[in-house]
Image (tube, one colour):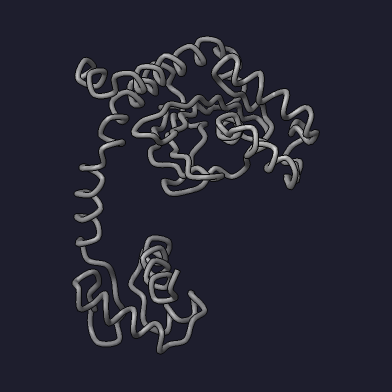
Length: 252
């Protein structure tokens, strides 16, 4: 990726993090880049109407143009349009976090996240990657969808670092765990990536791409309804894969 593109994206994310007007000096300091490079990015975004200057030397701040364009793009996303109603319904049935990620090679990116009503919950940021293939249910679901050659390549170089005391660090044990997940059509993370958190994941395919649906919550809640959760999860994924458009129409 070119430096100018990276710095433009860094600047957008910086405004989201800081939530305040920033001067050129602020931007250069926080992004650790030369002042001249900041000026090039700021000037381009200023000319296109993505940021504005509050007053001379008072700093810059994003206009609503970014929000408007993001909303228009999100409202037209064919996958999210199809998935949103069903995953929101799944969240309402279980009252736990429901997440949607798209697989791309050996990574998966979160596209949707629906929060439960409980104050104790598991959250991810849209755009985040699945953080561990060996210790999360989403990661195991991704691995379970690989062909034999790709799975062998993963295990050849994989380092199964322990994230908790329950993380599977044996390659043989992980492979067995993945096979179990494939047979029952859902993968389990029982406090393997984070203490006190249980997640279950299953997959569906749409337009030749693989998507992962994950249900996550505190183990004290989710473990008590694990079978019911898995049944709802599998049913939702099957319905989305078979007739996504018709299913959403029926729910509307």
